[in-house]
Length: 80
Image (cartoon, rainbow, N blue to C red):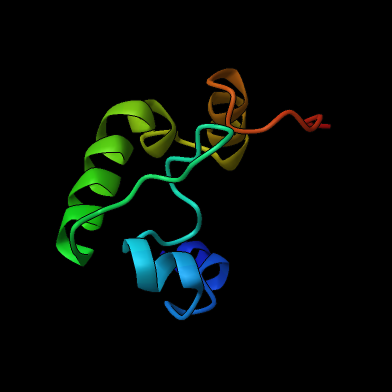
């Protein structure tokens, strides 16, 4: 959550204020997801975390966490 706070300038970015979207969540290359309110954003975010990132969130080590995030395409940087 601290990353979302940072990326949205602590909820004061134009995207956060206009679209209830914190951290540019759901960017498709052209537009960002727009949510009707903060609760809708939180629901979408938590549902995505529980599904898409479940294996990473259940990793036993930081290395396994990073490997899983890389495997699903969250980042492309080398792990070593």
